[in-house]
Length: 423
Ligand SMILES: [Zn+2]
Image (cartoon, rainbow, N blue to C red; front, side, top):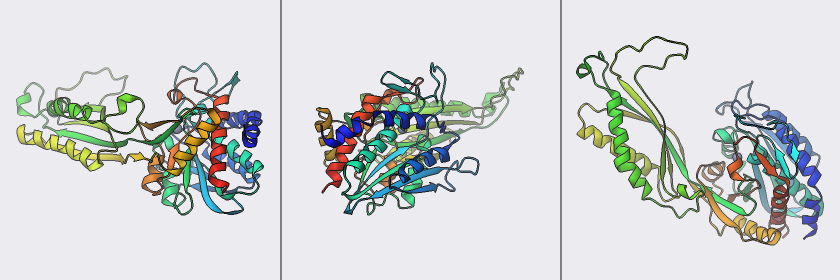
């Protein structure tokens, strides 16, 4: 064990208390509760340790209002000489509690080696581990090159537009000021997440003509047209996607191909309130809508993904009488994949080997996280997700994070700081 590792191990109680304090601020998203409180807690702690702290509100971002302001914190501690900046980015928001809890979701109970609470693993445990790692490094090394940054950002769980995307647009992730980014998402302490698949979301509407339900031949049923769309997906799109495999090490393995979820379907009359006990009127539906969630691979392009769906719809239009449709893109996320040779990857790989005595496993995420904004907006490619916690526990009831896992990953983060900043 190095001096720094010993120092981190000795901070166990501090780490537990910080994780509990973070969990006890219920930063629920939506709507975006208590963002300012959690940023202030970190601001006060890090400012007392020599960090320059800035509170940044993502004004005008989706969801930002005076009632629910989108607050972010960026803390920076300069070294004594020029060098690289290592940035730890954690989102501070958590998802709804849901049912099935046997512990207080915002109690932060410590039971044995586990701390329970919403956000314990995703990702207040990772945030706390990075704070402890940075603080221990600063105590151990008065003289270091470059800078350390720690950010706590809003809204990752709803796309990151009020958090990392906003900061990236304002230049906070400019490669001229930040060179290495570690996002302590819960990926397990011996795994390095290199990136994520892309996503393309769209609403498709088929058109019809309303008529009396007893004489459907006088109208045109939009639901039947949508049936033809779904049949074409089954016959052509799903098999084509299943045949498309990626070199990305996505986990779980089922996501190593292109996938698509049909998120919702609705046709005909609007649904009535639950207490309405009348009967439906007899009408031919003139509209049917679905929302699709298409996840794609680094080997595909978003244009290709979109064009494939449109070509299928245009083919139906050519073959099927009176078929007409509209398509509206809802959102797009470009895949991100950091090279295994990138300096942050080789550094953390070596630190995992030295601290934990195992070889790192490389993975990629089926869904996306804030790396997309750092890559696409920030133009910063030297970025990974690495942090404590078991991914499968995220968003579940009785979510927990292991104290030993947090300490182990904090040692890996600390050693990585030594590699990158002591030169
Ligand atoms: Zn997360």
